[in-house]
Image (cartoon, protein in one colour):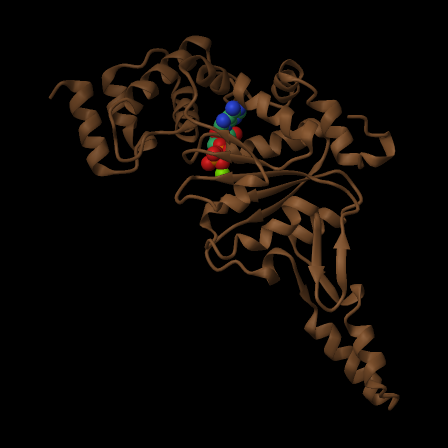
Length: 303
Ligand SMILES: Nc1ncnc2c1ncn2[C@@H]1O[C@H](COP(=O)(O)OP(=O)(O)O)[C@@H](O)[C@H]1O
Ligand SMILES: [Mg+2]
């Protein structure tokens, strides 16, 4: 396959240059503070080479949103974020007509008494009266952007269809205006906390990546990268204890966000070694359910 340079829009060229293989991707992400494992780095690289959206799925707090931000930092690109929620619609995701501006225009034309309705209609459904929402903004951007479609599993399955055209063709059809084609082919990262299955149509358009809880070694690296002033020894202890808690089969296992909060607390308190008493005292930083706190306390103290 040989693509001539001017058929590769700028963002994807930047992505290909930044993430050409696993080793370089791991290094570029590490430079901007993201600790990737070979699986994560590999899929980021493949998505860049293919110019396909990347779907990162896994439990909350494992670094999916941060991955999209880190990819952007590594590329020197801007993040455009669409935060998904139940009830999100076209007017929030794609575009909306600026009714106020349209009304003002109609009133102005009326006052001039030059009311050729067809001319006004053409006029007020022009680009100038269009409010760009994140998806349209991303394909219309002139600078390098990473489009983050965050927590896509929060959308109703019907609303997912809004994303399909943009994910496969990088274009948006607007009935009154026609098809808006991409000025650039943005790097796209979707995240899902896996609260429901996504449609096959959506998955087909993406490269899939599972982001699970990190290994003890990687979590130690993440803590060292994110928490200033922490020692290697303390970071290692945090990673090991959190791993033990995850093995307890709790309602909600602590994720990387909680490990980082805990590590920060330990540094602020000047703790050198983590005793059982300290862990029990700090469990509210790590766990979110009373039943989990009780279960963990029992396991830790043998009570
Ligand atoms: N591999 C990683 N490297 C650096 N920081 C990470 C990593 N994974 C998680 N984090 C940190 O953990 C926290 C939670 O990550 P986030 O991306 O919000 O999780 P998610 O989007 O999966 O719920 C953030 O503070 C993030 O910076
Ligand atoms: Mg997130």
